[in-house]
Amino acid sequence: MVARSAGMLLYRLAPEIEVLLVHPGGPYWRRKDRGAWQIPKGAIHPGEQHDVAARRELAEEIGLELAEELVPLGEIRQAGGKYVTAFAVEHDFDPATLASNAFELEWPPKSGKMAAFPEVDAARWMNIPEARQMMLESQHPLLDRLLEALGKT
Image (cartoon, rainbow, N blue to C red):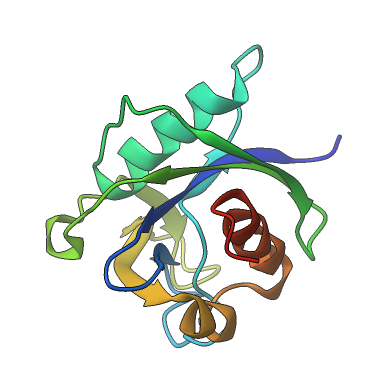
């Protein structure tokens, strides 16, 4: 079975187009920066609409609940094979207010000890060129689709 997720690309327009990207939490991502940032996203529950899942994941990963109309950005396939359906919405967010759910993981590996880590440990506004440098390469098409939707291609 192919993994499917839904996510949200927040953007703001002043003074230039900026997107909000998040850095995944946990020990695997701790020392990774360039190429690690991504849109807030997560698994779609059985029977759940993709837009509903994207809104839920945004709330879980950064603590922001949105009611605004979403702009569909379509589906991408990440390098690991996961399919992500993404939506865009114009909305400001203060990264200092980040409130993320946590997950548990055996850490260190094979230690028998469980440790809790935030799903997201940072959020940051980036302009489009910076976002292209910092985000997962397989999510780059989402930036192109956002620019197209905004008539900025």
